[in-house]
Image 1: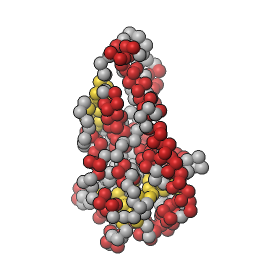
Image 2: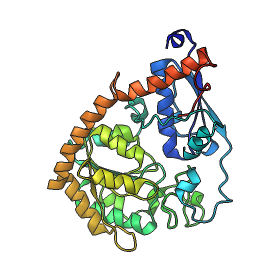
Image 3: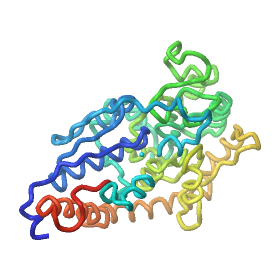
Length: 359
């Protein structure tokens, strides 16, 4: 470690996987490396993801580089989302064979609240007008997609529940629940550009009928800020890893509605007795969650006894998360250990592992 003290701060290359859900934690990692350790970096992503909101306001010392979009035409129709992602196990296998330097999994990473990112979004003033803990936030992540029928059933269920809600609505797709995961805007109802408003797929008159208690916004909302708002008391989520961590960090109980990839496993864990953060929705045999189930589950989470238990557990998990992420806590110590290894390698590249390594 003596060498690391005098070694210049390294510059690292951080590769984001091909998916919107991978860009945000990579941007947060680069930000923490710069703020805590003076490490500059280049984030390498893909052209279809290079305009992601999380890359819009990076601090100095962090640059971005975009690779051509990965062609997926050679994959079989209906290929599993995991097959299309690939970009950690392969690295580990090649690292073990000496082809690549060691790879480290340093996550997970949760973005801190940024008022700058939220103040221009219209959902924030609306939340300011709602009672504490009264709003159910509905969002299926950066790429989760519902069918046309499921979108209609969800809308009817939210309306019937009588609960306040903030719903991030995306274009429906009747064939692929991960249709938007790689940054595209796709439907199977023809040319998506012919109608540039996903709210047009909601039941006729829905927005007007629920105007007093609900707000629907197209495509995106500042999730960390929304979950941290005093008015939000529940989160209907697809249980993607980023969203699961956002819920725990904010202390918001969840209604688990997994769609693809690792989300079903996450939903089971979040609803387990050990974690206790989430309640589950029940789908019919055809996979559709009917409006009656949506309404009942939303009411139970927001005002029912099971929801109250999940809310208490959410507060406990928030306290544990803050302790873990605090300066000097386990997460900071782990990242510091990796940076120290880089600095040692830069000062004495002949000693120990080869310079570099992946995260």
